Structures are given as structure tokens and as C-alpha cells.
Image (cartoon, rainbow over all chains, first blue to last red; front, side, top):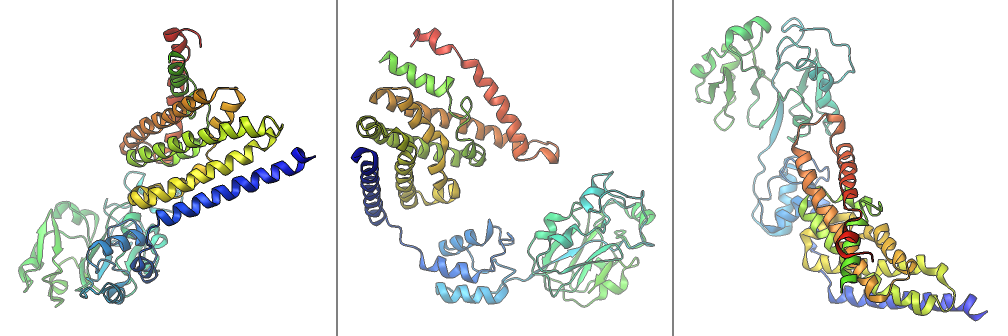
Length: 262
Length: 198
């Protein structure tokens, strides 16, 4: 009777309380003071774990900020988050460099043709796996909107089979950059409204054959730019947004119209 | 001493917990991505295994067996294992915070790691002595460490290699694991030939 019914209960009461005592002693002896800052930072950071700061999610960035990394790396959070971080940590406020993504393609139908008719699953990745996509131009936006699905802020629209990114909604997280199989979405400093909507690094003559609005690397924009912000490299114009004054001169002189202002 | 060596080698190579007995597959696939976390995980598992065996064997032999209460062993062993896992977690959190973070949820999951419960139950099932049990637990832990560390270096190579997208990640790891466990079949019979029958 005793060994059958009561002994197991006694054994487990004994084992359980011993384990409990051992653990409570251990947790007081080896207690880790929970970082007060960490708790607060966790609440302030957006919590979308986009990786724009360069760390694995918001939690890791919170750790790194406390350890002394710059507090202005969270582009989705913007100035507001940086301000709150600086208040909590008592460090000097640093302005967040706002960044936006832009898609380097203007190849709407009629401007750039198709290599073949793609009838597979409607995704850019699927099309890109077949001979680099259905566009005549290898750098063409495929228009199925893999980036639209990736965008946590609903900032991307597909207009005429080309991705258009809303500068006001975009926070410069890099979700779309990672999603685009053609790698034509880039991140730039949000200081100007002009951008080169072409990613083709072929010579001008070859670009002309496949796209009416492709960058032919003529270099007129570089010559006319009063701020000297444009360089032509790899048959492709690039704007240095540290120098760009957003005057829009390049937009008007570009013979193919591939420099866009939005 | 020779017998101890046989038990140890037997547990590491021929009866390797992961590759021959298929226990503890969860951390084997979950924590084998990076060699550092694999190392930390196997040290934690080995420690828990040793400590749990050191406690569970006397409890089973001196309390459960005389009173015919063997049916309690699973739940009692899990309680003891949970205690040690919590201890290891507290100590890791205090002294090795980066390791504690990189192991994440797999650390508390050692509690339900069947490799540890497996080795404690196998020890009392096979009627091994106290010292033999300890050595077998040590061998089991080292075998787990061997499998995990070798496999993690394999997986680092796998991660960089150009394989079809559908096979990336776990599928390729599972295929590699099957070949890996096949290769361990080659050890069977080795210890008997080296040291004579146990």
C-alpha cells in the first residue's frame, strides 16, 4: 500500500522540491541583470527585422547600439526612432540618412520588347530562370511583382509591367532588393528625385536595338550636370546623390529619356 | 580499464547516438549550421548527459528497483534532465551570452532531447554498473559532439556549393546526413577486433 501509492508521491515531492531549491539558488547566484536599455530599445525599434541596418533583425541591432554602434542606422524608423534612442541612451542625436529604393528600368511595352512569351508561374524568379527572363533586354524588369510581395510597406506598384517605387512610402529597407532576381532595384540616398531608370551595361548601340529608353552612355548628362554629380561607367550613367542638387537638368537633356524624375 | 575503453569507443563510434540510434536528430539538424554553435551545443549536451546519468542511476538502482517503481523512471528522469538543462542555461546565460543567444530555443529543448533520456534509460536497461554508466554517458556525449561538429563543417561546405534551389537547406542536409550515417556503419565490429569481445 505504502510503496504502491504513497512512496511515488513522496519521491516526486522530494525530487521536485530539491530541483526547485537548486534552481532558485542557481538563478540568484548566476543572475544576469536584465539590461534596462535593451527592453526599451526593443519597444522603440520597428520590429520588422528587415535588416536595413546591417544586422540580423532589430534585437541584434539593439544589442549593438548599446555596445556603441551608431544610433542612426535604422532607416525604416527614421529620425523619430533615432531621436528616441538618443534620449534613452543619453547619446547625441545623429540624423538618419533616409534611403529609398528605385527600380532601374523603364522598359514598358512599346519601349522594350519580349524575347519570348512567358507562360509559366507568374513570378519574376520563374521567368528569370528561363534564359534570364522574357525581356529582350537582360536587365529588364520582369513585371510579375516579386518585389511587391516582398515590400512590407506597400510602396511598390507594377505600372505597365514595370515596378514603380513610391518614394514617400519607401523606407529603404532592403526587402525588395533581395527579392528581385534581376537585381535592378538599388538603394540610394533620399536626397534627389532624379534617377537613372536603366541598369543595362551593354554598349549604347546594343542597348538601342532592344530598348528605346535604355541608357546609351552618351555622357551628355555628365557634361551638362552643373554639380558634377553624374559619371558614366560601364556604359551606364550613375548619379552621386551626395552631390546631386535635384535641378532636373539631366532629365531634360537625356536623349533617350531614361533619366526620370519622380 | 580496457573494458572502460571498449564501452567508451563503443558509445562513440559503433553505437553513435545520432547516426546509429537516431536519437537527438532535432539539434543535429537544427544547430549544425555553424561550427561554433555546434561545439557549444555538444558541450552542453555532454555535460547534461554526464550529470543526469550520475544522478539517475542511483535513483533508479536504490529507490525505484527495490520498491518495484521502474514505471516512474521516464518522468523522474525527465525531471532531473530538465533541472540540469536549466542549470546549464543559467550558467551559459551568465558566462557565455553570445553562445546562449546563438543556441536560442535549442538550449531549453535539450530537456526533451531523446539522446539524453535515451542514454539514461539504456544504461539502467542494460544493467550497467555506476562507473560503466558514466563512461557510456561520456561516450554518448562525445559521439554526439563528433557527429554534430563533423556534420556542421560538412554543412558549411554545403551552404556554399551550387545546388538546385529545391534542395537548398534541410533537404540537402538530410541527404548528406544519410550518407554520413552510412559511413559510420563501417565502424561496426571494429572495437571487438581491437580489444577482443566485451
